[in-house]
Image (cartoon, rainbow, N blue to C red):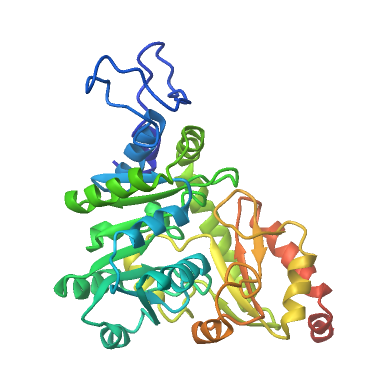
Length: 388
């Protein structure tokens, strides 16, 4: 079956007592046991909950995984992966990795002896040169946040496998609808289910997915031991959002592509970052491993930081906000918002300028969004002068 069908049917068996076609929310912290060690599969909701189990079943099916684990947020999921490492291990990350991942690795786990370095993952030779004898994880984010860089998943997974290195892909931007990292040889997939999978900007969540039994057992132990688990109601909300993910992401990708093409022709836009554009440096790789290019794009505005800030303050349909993947379009300045935790040096190295604007395209009509950007661009003094 195709992912869109799986998203509707997996984990959605009719409830046995009443036949309700939508499973109920199992809003309980504990479960009655028949005796010591005699129970119905659930003991305590930190360890397991039927609502969370149904979502994990759905996510595993749609991602093509044997196992899934759900967490309270995307960062809780990422944190669990890092907690599986030991002092002295080295993690290799993209230079333009998500700001929260950068902050966790650089400002939290550095105190516990976890080493991290950053490299342009699209450059295979640069990746080879950055590997160390103690490299334990090759962390891939493709497309990257916020520059929409793309790396060759299969090529990097094969390199990592030859050296016994765990490969992790943050598949949040692409979703299982557009990209299938496990089928390309990756060991572990991460999602912020807050984003496209939930899809309505009303819930937090994260997930880990894999096929390896031993890796799953290690992560499952940490999920229970640390306790940053998905709440039952949150799991139910994400399960509800999952039903329409195929329709939503295809429309968002179509709109994002149209907006990217329009921006590319605008006189005050220096560069547009969107893997669906032929001008994107890794467009061929994206076309090879993705069936769609997603609903996020970014662009560099001609001018200074104040121009970019004026632009995002002037939009009427694009709300100023630090998320993505929802039905409402959002705009942000990564250097001041999502990636503010990165040092200036790290942002410079990654290419995240003060005039970079990230757009998360929602489900509004694409022409309305273009017109909103047009009036916002016209409101920026330096832009308006050029347009006259």
